[in-house]
Every structure is written in structure tokens, then in C-alpha cells.
Length: 224
Image (cartoon, rainbow, N blue to C red; front, side, top):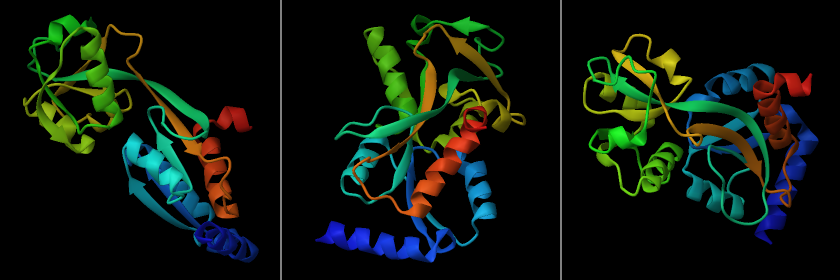
């Protein structure tokens, strides 16, 4: 009954139009969506968008409970049948302080990092999952000295507190920081951003439009 009531509310909102629609979105990282949100607000200023920051497990649960319309994940989501579109793929690099012995190196293997202190995000976040996976393949675990908000990681690294995995786009955010970037010798060192939704859920016109705008934003060539 609650699901039917929610669907009825969406139908009423659809009748009013895009300008008054509401969309609930979840994402592992907010930085990726900054420009997309600006474009959505400019094109549909009356559209209400609520953004939640969640890890992969939380997003899968939110989709199951229909608490969100769409989400943006950097790792596969577990759960019932879901629909997904890959929006972008980028390399993940190792960020080190400029004074670090690896600064200036073109690439490095995991074996050289076994005793290095890592600054990383909390369990369940894509970068932490990748870090744990890379070290597990080497038969060990990373030494973590700081875990928390990924937005603060580069500043922590630049201050000499450790090293960490960051997406290649972090280059732009590190222009004024004493940080160097090194490639890791692993074919798995990349981040694939996908937008995910439940195909059996009744998405509002606003939610479908938001999802389409995300595809247009990240895949302009595919939608031209």
C-alpha cells in the first residue's frame, strides 16, 4: 500500500510537470556530481533534488527500500536486478607528498607500498574497496593511518601524513598542493562511474529526466 501511495504521488507530480518534480539521488562521492547539479538547476530551476552521500551497500539498500530514485556508484551494487549505465571510466593514481621517495616515478608496484601509511576513505567506499583488493592480491593488508572524508585526503597527503589512491581527475584539485601522482602497475586501478536504478520501480518524469541529463552530461558523444 505504501508503494502504491508513493506511485500515486509521483503520478500527481508528473501531471504538474518537470518544474515541480522531486528526485532523490545517492552518490558515493559528491565531487563527481558538482557540475551536473549546476546544469540540472539551470535547466530545471523548479526541480527539487535531494542528494545523499552513501556507500555501495547503503545505496543497494536504499534502492531496495525505494528510498532513492537513482544513484551514482563507482563499484558494482549487490541486490535485486538493477539497470545501470556506465557514465565514465578513469585511472586511479597513487598520490604522494612531493618529498616522498616515489615522487617523480612514472609507476610503482604494490610490493613497494607494503610498509607505507595510507590516507583513505572509510570501509565500503570505492577507494577503500579498491585499496583493500589490491593489497589482498599481494597477500597482505594496507597500513591505514587515517580514514575519513575523501575530499580531505589530498590535503592530508600534501601535509606529509601518508599516501593514498585518488581518481585521475584529482589532478585539478591538487594544483596548489605539494602532491605528486604515480601510476600503479595494476590493470584494476581504475574507477568506473555508473548510474543505477531499479527497472521495476515507477520513476517520476523528473527522476527520468535527471537520469537522462546525467547520461547527456557524461556521454555527450553517445547522446548527440
